[in-house]
Length: 116
Image (cartoon, rainbow, N blue to C red):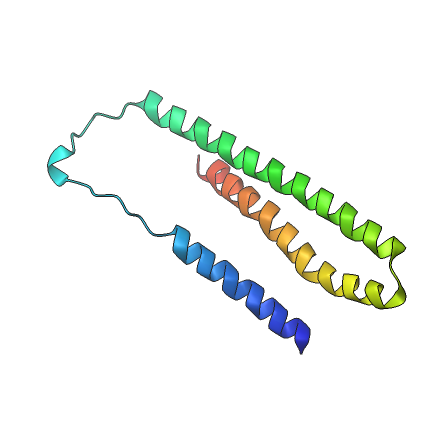
């Protein structure tokens, strides 16, 4: 039951975060739109910058995941039997978070490569 609640809470947090970052607070004046302003080179630079950002996010998430895994593993090795049980419980949400962090950027890259 406790695992189900933890998984539900993690999924709820992810949905809330996606909802917060989905908001756009830009003011667009339709009179400022000039068709043909953006050339092919501009769109290529935007795609290049986005791929750099996605790569950086993926690399940072992998590095942080490995460091946290090392810390949890070290604590598991030197912990008592009671503490080992607690570390086993923290591993499941940690592994789900690692998968989501890496898979999020990988899925976006895969979709872009499939379309482009």
